Length: 282
Length: 154
Image (cartoon, rainbow over all chains, first blue to last red; front, side):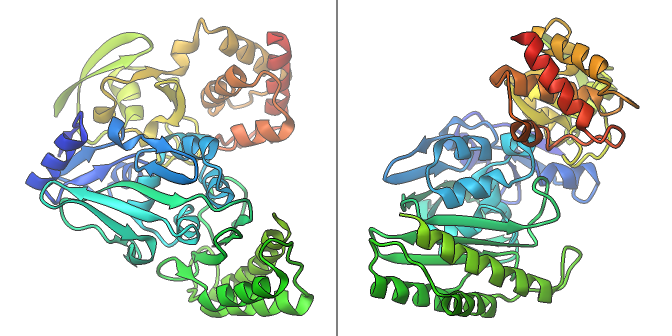
């Protein structure tokens, strides 16, 4: 096994161009577990954990979050609640101090905590390689399958960017306790009242993050009717319908963390709460 | 095997190492620093907690070879730290130690918490220590030790 610790992004991209099979190490919260338990023995590890170029974090109306930004920094600095609350549910303080947004994107698990929020914020991911330079991928095109990000050989994640979306956002996650939990199901909902958009994204209930488009259209209709600048107080029937539409979009499986039926139930409950809470938010 | 040089508790420490080994393994098996405990090796239990450039992390999830150039502080390096001293005294006084296996990790995490927040609320304490598992105490006395240490520090 060989470990390379490049001092600059250019050096890292050079190493990846020479050896596209090299495995990237960021916060180590996934890869180190696999190495500790002998599940993987990469021939070449390139550590990008401390590259200064990936630590950039610009907040404001346009948010740019470098791939190397940890969950701790993200939740201290970013204002989009859906993403902040998602980052806060990651692991524990120790894990949040190590794990990075780029790691979540690169690992590309359907249970990745920040991914539903990035989907609901309609984030764009910028990747780079030495050969082709930078390339931008909308989140909707990012997940090609479980653990299959839209990364070509030699590429790494540079950053995610999105437009700040105002306060009507929620992230909900179900698990066995508040800390150290891989989501059984999760949901992010962002109602951008200024831009008149609604996005609902589901985690851990399918092979990738799933956008609940029929539910989004329903909420958009309710806001068109009631006024985007006014609180939305959905009726019981509307909440139930919204929950059904979200559950219908889910494609959950049975696994060691929960059954498909439970996941479908819980995602509908989350959807009703998300509609209530975003509706009440300014 | 490779040669690593790490900055641990203020000193340059050098040893041969396997390139894929964790910082925890390096600390214990190469440097003989046994305060950081090896339990889960997957970041679940917090008993290997150390400071890496001032941030609380699980040393089992840090690749030793990638930690060259970083400032690593283990529980042994907190010997003369006033916050850690108050934490140790409070852990004894409050009965926060039973079998003792998780204690060093807790001392490091509690020191980190009290450095930034002398009087954490109960919920803040629970969140700050959520990455450290204890199978003996039921946590009540550990939380009490946080309160006592915070009070002692003023």
